Image (cartoon, rainbow over all chains, first blue to last red):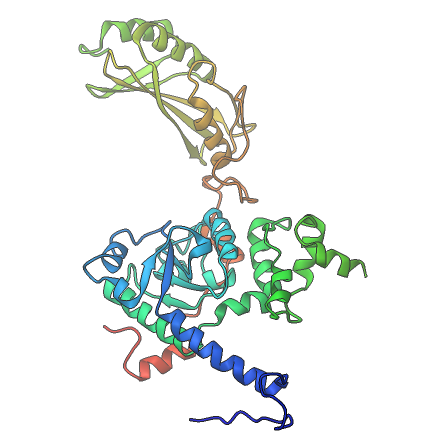
Length: 241
Length: 177
């Protein structure tokens, strides 16, 4: 499929000096994003948050047996340099807090894989008071790999699927965190109490990435102004107005 | 009293009135005594028989008798016999004296029991939440606490047969038996 970029400005002017109009700019941006997505999907770093299971299944995936490095996937030790947050197994309410802090530190675009049945619906800990049941209520999840535990082949298959999704520009769940921040924060507050906040100013980030929507702020983020005014200065001024 | 009981232990047990003990194995003794006599027993065991190691304090909730059972597990590297001292305290007010001044590690065990069962230990250095820092409900290890009810009202469930899964199953994927 070929798309002709319409040039609407005066053909006599020097092409390097003219300002591209909005439609042309968006098309250019799409092309650049496409190239960037393709490059990005070939080089991914996983931050594996192994609080639950996966100590048997993940090492063969990453090391010589199944060798995810031939797909371009390597483990990384810090959230700020990682692309994928791999949540293996159950999350207790206490560790979820740390996972959210970790997730917000990662630079966009970031991808979350929920691995194992526990992240989908509580798994074998479904009636435990201490573990969360659905990960997607607290942060956007790109992909779930079901199983208790999934086999290394299944994890590899999941990685391939994620690479494919990133390549096609479909792995955009991270944008949802900015679009729907009020919903996610509300679910977090239901567990951690109304004074829950992180040092990250997600609303300012949403503006910076131009991902601000009407659902970014709401009744739950209004509580941030009360309890976390140190971190969300921008929003406080707005609420005063 | 048993023939194999070491003399040093027998001399300690003779000091405590109303003490009942039974031998589970040669290396494991179960001792029941009155709650007010427990600190004295721990002091005597520590001072005379070398019971320097408080392995754990465990708590049992008995809903029928409305009592908490506290079990102090002690180990001596000299006598090499585990002594489990059982006491029963009423659920209301659910208060007992701390043994932190005899065994320092008791602080952690008592703090843990306080958040899991709600027993308050007087004289314990710290009764703040230890593991359940994000917890607003009742003490979860009580028999009266229903974990299932709590989960039902706190969390939402994923659908087990959502529409998107039916599409995958129609194409030969999904749950394979």
